[in-house]
Image (cartoon, rainbow, N blue to C red; front, side, top):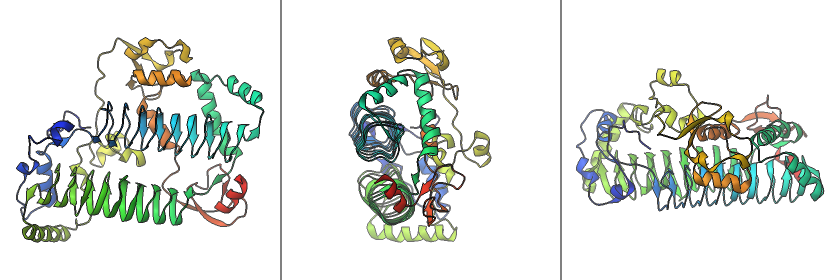
Length: 486
């Protein structure tokens, strides 16, 4: 995940976890000066793990991933097989271009859905098969342009059809062509919000929770996209997290009593940590695995009582930690996250773009780094995406050797073999948009991490919702929504 311009060494997984180097050999004594300045100097020397990807098979281009097989360009995904261009998903097979899906197979362009099969463009659906361009379905099959249905079959815009009628309508869309698929996608985005009401918040089996898209949670305040968590505040995408605050992308192993952490799992009593797995008592540490009671450390494995990658006996460790905390407190820095200048990434490479997108000019003005695109490797042919054949049947095998210029950004991208096989299997056209831009479009379809006070469109009862007042949707409180769908 690091460019060649990074100042520190980068190791592959075999070398990083091997015994031919010792991260403690880079340790330094703490000086009574700026802690973060000393940390910055350490960061320039200590080797880092090239990519966060453990116990995976043939999935070299997946980051923050665990136990994947035959996957490509997935991020934050675990126990996946034959999946491409997905993010934050678990236990799926043969899925492409997904966001936050679970236990599903043969999905394309689906979001926040679970236990679904052979479906495209679904949002917040569960236990569905052969459904298309639909939202908030449960237990449905062969439904098209539908919303808020339960255990239905052969419906179009929520109207019941015979099997023959449904199949004729579906065939008329010509979804094997790019023009047909795009027309159907526009119909989904334009017609569903106008025709069908939405629930104010997606809360499933939740108690005393504030936020949106929460599942099996209790006592959550201002939290979004969380499951199986309790007693947390200001969290984003938490899974199995308890009694914690100000943290993002935590899971899937249980974490508890964490503050200002990101990308961690299996932590207890930790503060200001990034990408640390299975540890306790960590402070201002990154990429530390199976470590306990470490302060300001990087790339440690199975260590305890370390400060700036230098090991101490426990009494000396505790005394020095107390001194460092005092210095940080006096400087007004204790408890805050790492300064942004310690990040090795450009702003446009980081997760910040997911939630607070900035132009290059604004990012640089704010003091952030920016990563320029690197040149594409040699290819036999470069083609404008607009020149691609409309139908998947007209796409030759030779497309695997081409570079395609994105119709939205102009950035070049390639089609890989497994991707082409997937499109042919589902009879879908080749995309004209760069994978990063497709991911950005999916992200833009999410509701913001913000709540508004509105009145239910049906009973007029006051409620909180992630739909802003100017949105076109008819927004219902939970009670009225349940009457609508049941």
